[in-house]
Image (cartoon, rainbow, N blue to C red):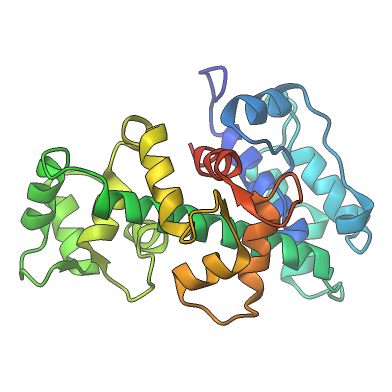
Length: 268
């Protein structure tokens, strides 16, 4: 896909990446931006760090290696992967479960935490820093889909709206990724956050303004207490430790403006 030419074998690769994340909590090729990630995908070495992978079977690792074969001509088909002994034995409960390491579970928590901070920041920018003129067309689109006028989009309204526009879309995926508060609906702010052209709208100035919303004491950094205050969470909620660990790249215990920008821009 990076080279602009691909077939169904790319789905085998994608499933290999998903399986890697499910077993370790981390992606096989990672980086702070797309350029770095693409470079590592194309030329990086597939690794299985002992910390995350010590309890994972060699059969699972071998399957992932097959699925993440760079040359698509040498990569197995979906049918071959389905018939792999590891998949078949797992599906028939012919082998006992290995306990996933706490480290892998913590890695997954970090993914969730990062998305949480990014989603909240984008929501703040969409609600407070984007002009009505910039969102006029999106507002009209929301109104046209919101047929009962209750200010939120249900599954049925989304299905009808996309069907009317003759666009095939995975409604479950939309609800999962856009329904930030998990109430089963997409409200106006969630809709705007999800549909804005962020590559155009996410300016340095707007990120700086959003940073100030977290940095309530004006110290130039975001502390753990300020994160918790912004989200209104319990004082010892582990998710905020994960946010801090992910964003605080220099390890000084706070998030400065550059670290904040770097984390936000990594989404794009």
